[in-house]
Length: 116
Image (cartoon, rainbow, N blue to C red; front, side):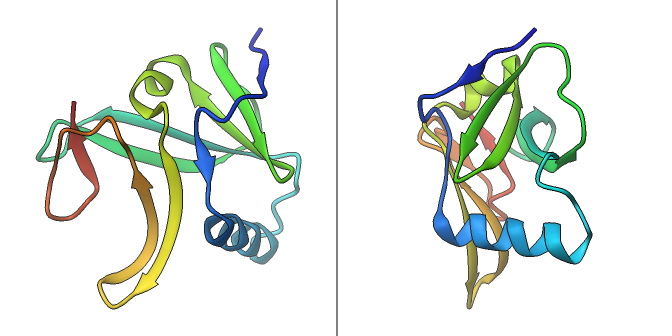
């Protein structure tokens, strides 16, 4: 089974944590539920980010915690997301979650896909 990671392989900005908690509260999602993040093939640059609430840890997932928020990341995705910060923006260019990924060597204009 997976082990809890105490290092900050992936971080979540305070603004993103606030928005995630707001979404959880609005949808009656309990704190025991983790936020699953990952990458999958697709998009104009080769890989896209995925994110969603997950009530159960899957085989091979790594758990990270920040401010009592659980983050579930599968092993393959962790390789691509090491050092990434999940942020939230509500500026002039739109509102939503943003992955600030130092591993991405190319990104597309929409910011939702990347390549390494």
